[in-house]
Length: 428
Image (tube, rainbow, N blue to C red; front, side, top):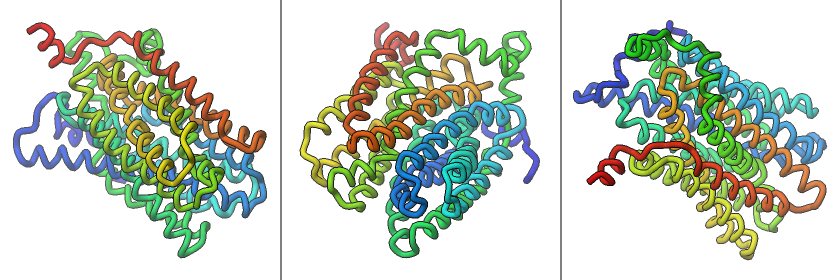
């Protein structure tokens, strides 16, 4: 591993708008590295639901037990992010991403060798999910926030988020093709090897936020906040707490779909290929949602955009429950879910940056991601338990509708000023 260098981070200053072609190239290289890493880690993680039935057949553990391993992975992915973010803020993003990518590859490759619930929890829930957390959105979004100009951070976060969406869109058909040609075990190990393509991003995203903390401290004539002080300041902010509650609901919804949508398709009597293409449709249309939301966050209040997204999810699920379960309906539903799937990330990242600045961004957004993944644990676990108990996923959908309505309402009291353009227009 090369040593981290804050000078490399300063090459693309967050306060200077790049004007030269070389600076523009550096900006796009940062976005490509972050979006590509997220595409690989998210793409592999979000296709694991395609292997749930094969794992159950191979191990005989039952859907509930295997869902527990996936659910633990959702929780552990969130738990690692505040700590990975704090380490990245201090010693450098590159080292954290390097270790994370290797852990995802190792966990994915050894998963087919596990024959017990504990083994699956270790491979899927600890190694793969923990590594994906270390090379996940809190670290990648913080690195992007640090390395791009403030005026472009909203669009940049949308591009990085769209990278994760593209990974899901691309990986689902690849996984199905590998399963058909090599068998499910070999297919999973091939996916683990593909993850290693993210390693070159280490050299682009290296650096830490120490120089940002020092600059902020110099401007305010105050010493930089320690990690504990930054967390205490954030948790004392009511708007930050409300943001966490809303993102908890996002995690419940996303994890349930990622883990159990192939099972929902099967329960509706549709072919497994529809399940794979439904996951791909989520990824494809999430690109649209992520890029659109990256554009929108500089024009409208981010709390209003979040409320709109959560309300749209709840309405879409209600319509899906009432509609006939045909392949066309399933794919349209997946497309609508895709538009809202991870488009919550750019406004959430933007609000954290607006509240506290970029100095402790990885750690503070990591805490929000932890709330997201606590919801993710419940979404993945309850999906399996409810299906085993009732033979249907309907009660999970009912819970999801209620949570979506609550999330839409809880974001409204967040205190956020109008964006500069909207404020200027109102003043005019």
